[in-house]
Image 1 (cartoon, rainbow, N blue to C red):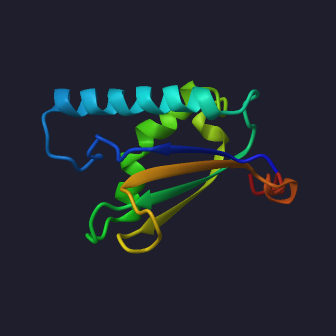
Image 2 (cartoon, rainbow, N blue to C red):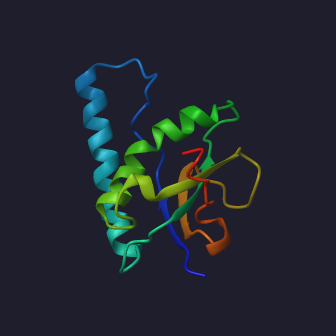
Length: 135
């Protein structure tokens, strides 16, 4: 099974709920997207994955609880950067996203970071046939 993993520092982008000037937010988002695109081009697949399952491991810097929605929002530009690097053709190819949060002391060699793992979804999980009468 092909699995592609990239380890990135904590995103600079504060997420959609960040309270900073719009120019600072856009600069941070652009930097995150470029970093993910650069790392993704180095370790990514040769051909785009058609149907993707993502696992985002969020290693928190503190024991402060972060909401999974906010974690996903802060990783948006990382995902866009991996799209630019050619991991998949479009964001629509991502069918499932799992976010796991880890706190200090839960693992050896702990360092605040984000680990994004992309896997092709199994054939059985790809698409569920829907009756056209309900579509």
